[in-house]
Image 1 (spheres, one colour):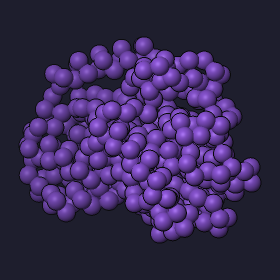
Image 2 (image 1 turned 90 degrees about the vertical axis):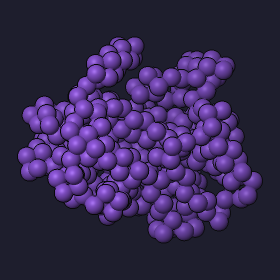
Image 3 (image 1 turned 120 degrees about the horizontal axis):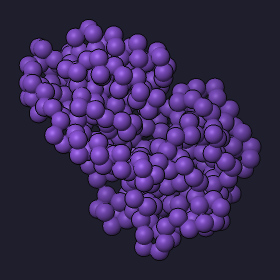
Image 4 (image 1 turned 45 degrees about the horizontal axis):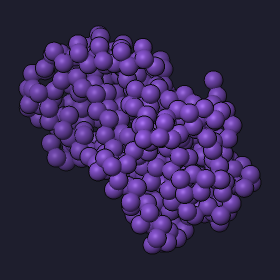
Length: 357
């Protein structure tokens, strides 16, 4: 981890003197987006596409997108096609697009690339992500108050630090309210697969979970929760329309302001490679309205956590904290720093099961 922090610090130092690109008018600006799921997933990709639409509306530039692009060789082909067809700015919106983005960026040094949730940058590649774990601390607080069984189910996509970090933040917040509560995790190895997500929700409910949360993109888990009479949280988007009784709230990703700002920078010539990791305070992570099932006192508790994180008086990973094996990972008053969070590869106390290799 120290090696990774060192690499990131060197990258920042090099990039601080990086190139600044020339200005362009709206008529000369073409912006491309690469999506891992369909725009109708009502989750992750849907919210990125809402941001794309905001760019069009506010800046009057031409945008295009390619949806349901598999991570890997397929992504490289799509990214290269966008770059070779006159797109000045390209947003690649999934972790698995990181290496393809870097590879294509080397071949098109005058194109500005923006990669979501990754950590590799070059002079013409920026990175950005949301501190989704901050939202997980808010919904974990709600789960701690509202779970009667003390068992919460968590549907996870891929075992990358972003997902593990979210599981841990949720669990820590939940156990601050109910120290005996546990989280059961099912890994579906997909960002968007309604069938697998729905089956995972059913399996977790059968194991005693009375609240379901997810780091996958479809509303299927919420729909199962609604059918089975348990509660759930939306992911990346307000999904209450699919489960008005089941959804307690949702973590909403608001990419629009970032996309507008970065395209503006490309247009006025101030764009340069940066790393952005924003959360509740800047508004990149938003908590959806609370459902009718959430009592007033639980809403107040959740708001206290949300406001504390936003103001900087509360950190989701503040000690004392132990990992799943009972080893201390943060002492009393100590906060786990961003370097460790960015590479998090262990569960905290209260999470059942193992992280897949």
